[in-house]
Length: 326
Image (tube, rainbow, N blue to C red):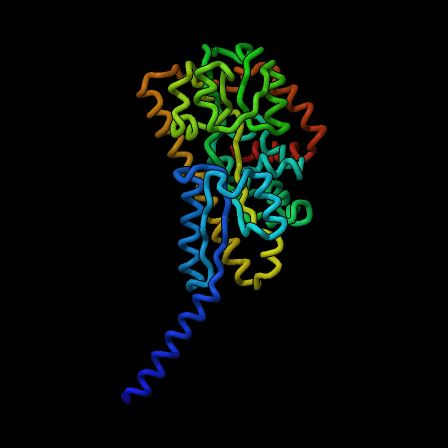
């Protein structure tokens, strides 16, 4: 091959490569959980597969640990298009779509496997269809954290022991009502403050999942781990509505499908993680582990149900679907 022709071909190849690179779209994805959290791992895995399947057209950069702000701030960024995607707690979405509060009904599901079936069922999926209109973002799928439980700095044998106690919660209505009905004082605070607050008495306990209790070492400041699995705690994958409108249909399908796929892996992941982390905590011998079912909470569950069936009638449909799973 003539040197000039070879040089021309190389120039064309380099130019094409640079053009593809210049046209690549970096999707910024926000999370409030730490870089080591399973949600962040799922976001990174999604990004790797998206880059591969799109031939480099798209990449994902995850910003964990609230680097882009809290979830309310990230929601605003999604609405304006300043943020492309988020893996966000459904708790934040309930502030704008109150019907999604029904997903936090006590003992709606028994474990994360059942949560996966329910969240991929018709009622939960219909709730996703409302998001573009009601929050300006597209819901592409659900995942979950470990089931909720309590780590308390005081001996706990029954729901009555929570009366008058200060409990750190995620501050949104269904959880707040749950603890108020138990007679506890709901005390919102950042998770990063909980460890010291358990030690100095600013809070008496924390509503959390077992991953947080283990990874953030809350058990070092506790007395009793109430292993109740009393609520699921879903995460939803969101894409900015502004971005979504700009994407061709095949790209929507690719991005949405991969986000849903990797969020869905969390249902199985937490089946394993929950067992492993409970074992880790037990082996430290720092806290007493108390297994608690619905009877632990007495009539509080019925009172909560009566309140929330009136507020979110969709709860009745979720209960029927959940009963059919078992």
